Amino acid sequence: MRFAVVAAAAILLAACGPGPMPEPAQPPAAGLVALPCDGRGALRPVHRTYCARHRHYVTGTVAAVLREAAERLNRRHPDAAILYMEASWPRGEKPMPPHVSHGDGRQIDLALFYETLDGRPLARPPTASGYGAFEPPRRESERVCVPDGGHHDRPDPPADRTWRLDDERTAELIRSLSADPRVRRIFVEPHLKQRLGFAADPKVRFAGCAVARHDDHLHIDFH
Ligand SMILES: [Zn+2]
Image (cartoon, rainbow, N blue to C red):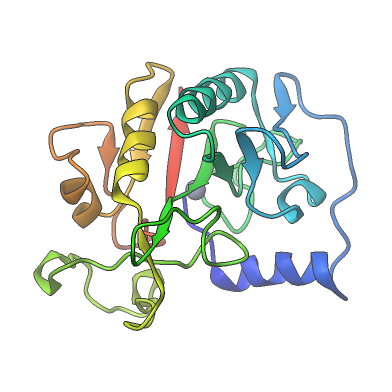
């Protein structure tokens, strides 16, 4: 659910230069499988470090749901892929720091879809980690969390940014996952839940102000 910027930066640094060594490979806990890491199919890591650090394990059921959703998406948009960030580590125990709810293979963070200001799809999020490209509320009144020194204090991106949320593809992904009975819930900010057309969908929920903003990624929980 939550993912600290500092931790994201540390992970990326570890992949690109001096830093902590990746966790040693270990046999995955029973029932966990690795998501694809080759970067070629319709289901890919945003950055290779998620695989290098063994943060890409899920249950077999989750892998099947994601694979099927990616195939559906890819049939409609051959240039599109589901890009994942943090899932679980192979040991299958919660929590997996810095997250409070990842670790047993039933959670994953997925990238939102973005486009240029003239509506051309971006192949990937405009940040290296996939986190941090916040889509701000269109009206200040839609911002439900007050500044309190927590995760929701993270600022909106600059007003002169060259990208914006791809509402259509992001909504399509949420709709596809929400329709799957193996998906338990999907966390997004209230302004996106409303704007993308999920006001009446009980699976699409607000995670609260005490955890990370969910207008830069989707957190998916599975049964
Ligand atoms: Zn998450």
